[in-house]
Structure formats: C-alpha cells, structure tokens
Amino acid sequence: MVTFTAIPSPSSVFSAYASLSASIMLFQTVLNQFVPRPVQNCISSAIRYYFKPRSSKLVVVIEENDGISNNEIYNAAEIYLYSKIDSSIECLKITKRPKEASINIKFAHCEKMVDYYDGVEVVWRFCCEERKKGPSKLVDDDSGHFFSDFEKRYFELSFNRKHKEKILGSYVPYVLRRSKDIKAEKKVVKLHTLSSISYSSSIAWESINLEHPSTFDTIALDAKLKKAIIEDLDRFVRRKDFYRKVGKAWKRGYLLHGPPGTGKSSLIAAIANYLRFDIYDLELANIKRDSDLRRLLLKTANRSILVIEDIDCGVELPDRKGPSAHAEGRPREPQVRSCRFTLSGLLNFIDGLWSSCGDERIIIFTTNNRDRLDPALLRAGRMDMHISMSYLTAEGFKILATNYLDIKDHHWQFEEIGELIESMNVTPAEVAEELMKSDDADVSLGGLLNFLNVKRKKMNDDDEDGDGTKDKGSDEIDQVQKGKRLKLDINTDELPR
Ligand SMILES: Nc1ncnc2c1ncn2[C@@H]1O[C@H](COP(=O)(O)OP(=O)(O)OP(=O)(O)O)[C@@H](O)[C@H]1O
Ligand SMILES: [Mg+2]
Image 1 (tube, rainbow, N blue to C red):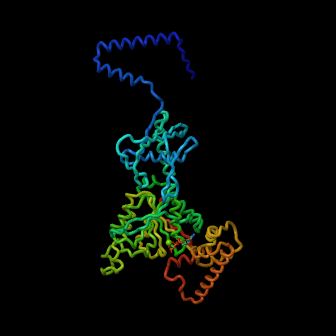
Image 2 (image 1 turned 180 degrees about the vertical axis):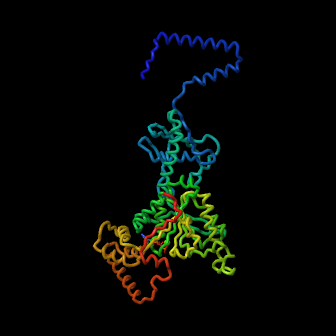
Image 3 (image 1 turned 120 degrees about the vertical axis):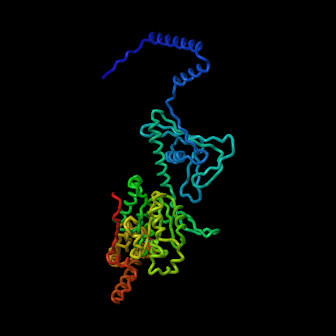
C-alpha cells in the first residue's frame, strides 16, 4: 500500500506558527492573572520537561567500586576491553606479580574505544580522575592485595537509547561472560596442600603453582578411554543448568585405580591443566577430626579438584557404623584411635554439605587396590566414573616415544618393542625411565629393548618356578595382568547424555 502525504506550503506553515504563538501568549496571560506564582512555576517546569529537546544518546556509568566492594561489571569491562585493544589506544600500563604467569594490562589515561554488538555501536570511555577530597581509599585489586588509591576510575558506556534493552539485557551479560572466559584462559592452576600452622595445632591449605606438565596429549592412555574422559569433563562443565534442573549438586567423582606407575597422578594433573581447575591434595593422614575435615573442605574454592590419593592406605578409616559395629564390641586397633575422623564424615561432606555450598567440584580418589576399598565408597552414585589405569600397551608406548624422544612417525625398533610390551606387564613409568636415559633415540630404544628382554626372561623364570610370587598380594594387579584391560566403568546412575 502506498500512502501519499500532502506537503504543506511555506505560507500555511507560517500561519500555523503565528496562531501557536498567539495561543501561548494568551495561555501565559491567563496563567499570570488567575494562577498563584508557585503553581505557575510547577506548570512551566513540567512543560519545559516534556518539550525539552532530547539527546538520542544514553550514557551508563560503571564505577570501579561502590565504596565497599569492587564492581564486577567494571572488572569485566576492563578485561574485555583489554582483549580488544586496537590502534586507537595510545597509552597503557602493565604490571606483573611474581607468581603470575602473564602480564596485566590496564589503561593509563582516559581513552575511548568503539565496539559493535549485533550491529549496534557502543562507545566505551575510560575515565580517571584524581580524588578531590577525603583520604585515599584502600582498594582490593581482586587478587587479595590492597593498595592506597588516589584516583577515581570509571567507564562510560554510551549508545543510542533505542537499544537500551539490547545493551543492558544482552551486551553487558555478554561482556561478563567473555571476561570470565578470558580470565579462565589466563588462570595459573594452583596446587593446594596441607601444612600445619606453627602457632597452633591446626592445619591449613598452602598453595603453589601447579607446574606439572602432564596433559591429555602427553599421557599414554587408550585412545577410547582418553576420549571418554575428555567428553565426560566437557559435559560436566557445560551442564550447570542441567544439574540445577534435576536438583543434583554440580559435582563429579572419579575413582582412578590401577598399579603404581600407570599414570593416576599424571591423569589428575592432565585434568587440572585441561579444565584449569585448582587441585586440593587432601592427605588423610594429616586429618585428626571430622571438624578439621569440614573446615578444610569448606575452604576449598569452586572450580576445583579435591584429590584423595591412595584412599585405601592413607589412613585406616573407622567404618561408617562407628565403634558399636566393631567386631564383638572390642575396642579399635591403636592406629584407628589416633584418627578421630570417620569415613562417614568424609562421605557426608562429599554427598551432603558440598551439595549446598559448592559448584563445579570434582573429586578424585586414587587407589592401587580397588578391592580393598570400603563398599560405601564404591556404591552406585558415589563415584560417577571408575577409571582403570593399566599397564602400557604398544599404542601407549608410541605416545611416550613421541613425548620423550620426539619420534613422530615410525622407528625400526617399534615393532619388536611393541610385541614385547604387549606380552608382559610393564608400567608407563618403567618405560618412561628407560626413555630418559639418552637423547639419542637409537640408544634409548636399544636400552629399552634390553630392559624389556631382561624383564621378560625374569617373568619366564618365575613362571617356571611356579612359586606364584609374581605381583602377589593384589587382586587389582592380578586382574589387570590377565587382560591388560583398559576399562572405564560408569556407574548406573550416570546422568543421561
Ligand atoms: N599413562 C602414562 N602416560 C605418560 N606418562 C606416564 C604414565 N604413567 C606413568 N607415567 C610416567 O611415570 C611417572 C609416574 O606416574 P604417576 O605418578 O602418574 O603414576 P601413579 O599411577 O600415580 O603411581 P602411584 O600409584 O605410585 O601413585 C610420571 O611422572 C610419568 O612420567
Ligand atoms: Mg600417584
């Protein structure tokens, strides 16, 4: 449909304007004569407000802090904008603290940057002013350090007011999300361990940077198992809403079991490096009471991995039914008396308390003997995945050869070594040690071949003796020996995919 509109002639516009002016003058006279002065003022300011020419621009001020705490949007904007710095920026300042891996970049002076979101132009202005009066503020710089601040810093975000909903409802949350991702990429993974506090008898977390170089690329694991673990981790971190919907705590438990030197600790480091989650290494032998355990666990942060290594032998945990359930009511063994924290304390915390006070938590138990674990730890729903770490395979050996000797393709000794490895139980740790003995691939592989042949011969001799001494004492190890299995059990209450 086409609409035609009549264009007014200049003379008609002039006469309309003249009659409007006359009406306003008449209205003014009536006001002056009959309406009291205060009411007149009210009416004229209301008229001025409604007929004032409006700017189409809306400016949102984002201050660094509100006087008490830091403004999350300001911090997010800072991180987001630094990732988009272009040639229009003239001056920046950079800092780096001793334990930080990367430098921090900040604007040095007032600067302006233009950004586009869904076709809409937004203009950011960084403003920095000297505080005019009052004492300088003590400011937390978001990494636990406080410093005196003589400056007031803020961002001005301006855009066309017709996009108010889009910018405030969608662009600002996008900036918050992006900054979180950028921060996660830069994050230095920490390893928290327990240390005793000198002036009291209690223990606390102490942290260092996790320098463990293990990654999913360097770890020798069956390709299918590796893929399944990575997929499980990816699914876990992206399922925040799902966990909330089904009323489950956002946590995941893994039990790593297998003989010594098969890569359980290396896998934990690989998971931490992959997710950039901190590790809390909880040595049960250091814990005396349930209350200590609770206090320490409450101090762990979100997006972290709680690790309890060698759960079967770290400490003898009193069983969940307490002393009364102990055989014939006899008192506990002396070593148990020294430990006043219970398995139920541990399990309750993992299942209960953590459900209400933590997000994105991973808990990993390791053991050399799964069969020796308390059934309470193994029951369905407790540990989501049981991952069996096994002896080296020919496929896993190739990953080690690439890591240690930089052999990308084939080597003439691979076939013989592969066959030997498949025919016996040799751990990745044993092979890694041999591969480290020389930089020369031929020498290293020759040494490994020799080592494997000697081991093979020893195993044959033991078999002939028939004394059954080989790897005695561990059902776990025996089971693994039989099939060299690389097994991944997922408990039956596994969440739907
Ligand atoms: N699967 C593997 N892939 C790559 N390297 C491995 C693997 N397993 C072991 N290693 C090498 O052996 C060393 C010891 O391995 P790790 O400490 O991870 O074994 P573990 O299973 O935790 O042993 P333990 O049961 O004694 O704690 C590692 O530093 C690593 O160099
Ligand atoms: Mg270990």
